[in-house]
Length: 121
Picture (cartoon, rainbow, N blue to C red):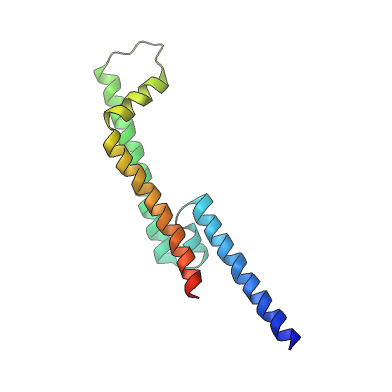
């Protein structure tokens, strides 16, 4: 009887480690990495792709607005990068904010997906 309970506790411990690893990958590495670790490739690739599109799109949008401001305004050689970045944010704040919220939501959904998958099993 004791042997069965120790096997059960080892199995529970293994599942707990797997859950922690998958959550850690999603939280610290990249959304979708935890799904790939759990061999849920479709969901993993979806979250990775969605996050890449949002991060890439936000970066491209930010840089295009920054270069637009550089071309429109004449900056001297002693350009303050932080001022330029602040002006970029100010000029396109709504769009950039929505994109950043999208990045956060994809990350959150990926974490919740791993959490829910372990609660179901």
